[in-house]
Image (cartoon, rainbow, N blue to C red; front, side, top):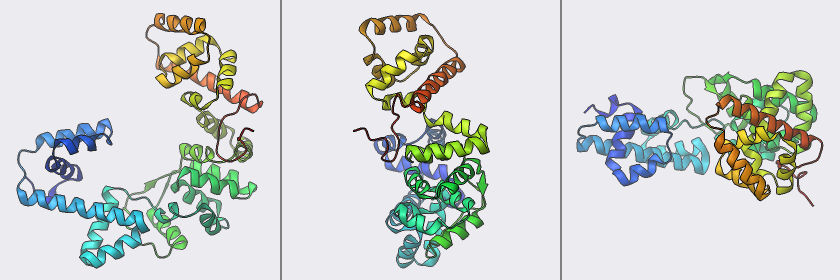
Length: 336
C-alpha cells in the first residue's frame, strides 16, 4: 500500500471508512451522492491491506481536520488558526488549515455568514454593485435576501443582475475584499478560480426577499435584460412548489390549467405533489385522472417539462393578478 503522502484524498477516505467499520461507513454513505459512493466504493474494493501505522496516520489526520472544522464553526478560520498554532505549532497548524480548505472547500466570507445581516449591510452598502454582488453570492440565500431588500431601490436590480451574470472571480480579489470586511480573517485560498453567482444564486436570493422588492427588481431587469428576467422568473417557482400553496389556491389552479397538462405533470410528480393535488379534487375526478394516467404509457421527459412549465406560468399569472398567494420571504405575504 502506498504511503500517506502519495495517496489521493479519495484513497485516504477509503482507508478511513475501512478503519471505521461497515456500520459507521454506511451512515457516512447517506450523505454522499451516487457518483461519490460509486467512486469511493471502487477505491475501498482496491485496498488489499492497510498497515497499522498508515491507518493511525490517516485517522489522526482526519481528527485534526475535524477539530479544525469545529474551531472554524466557532470563530472562523482566523480563530481556528490561532488555536491550532497553540496546540500544534505554526507549521503543523498551517498544514492542517491547508488540508481543510482544499479537502472540505471552506467557502470565503465564512465570518460574514455568522454575522447579522444589518452588520454586513453597514459594511457593504457604499461599495460598488459588483463588490456587493460578489459578497451576497457567498452568503446564505436568506441572509442575502434581507440585505438586498435593504439596499436602495436603484441599486437592487443592478446587484441582482450582476449576481446572475457572475462567472468566476480570482482568489486574489476575493481575498482583498475579505480583508476589507474582516481584517483579522486569514484565509488560505486555493489557486483555482472559484465559481459563484449565476442565475440559480439570484433566484435563491430573490426567494428570500419580500414580494414588493422582488417585483421592483424583476421589472427593472425586464427593461435591462428581458431574456435574463424571463429565465429568472421561470426558476422562481417550479412545479413541485405546488405543495406550498394553500388548498384554495390549488383548487383555483386545477380549474385554470389544461387537464392534459396536469395529467402529464402528475404522472412523474412526487407522491407529495400527487397527494395534495388529489386532495383538492372530487373523488370522481381523482378516479378519472388516475385511470387516464395509467393508460398514458411512457412519456417523454421533454413533454413533461413543457407541461409543467405551462402550469407554472398559469400559477405565476394568477399570482400577478392577485387571485392566489405564493408564499415568499418578508412580511407582505402574511394573510390576516
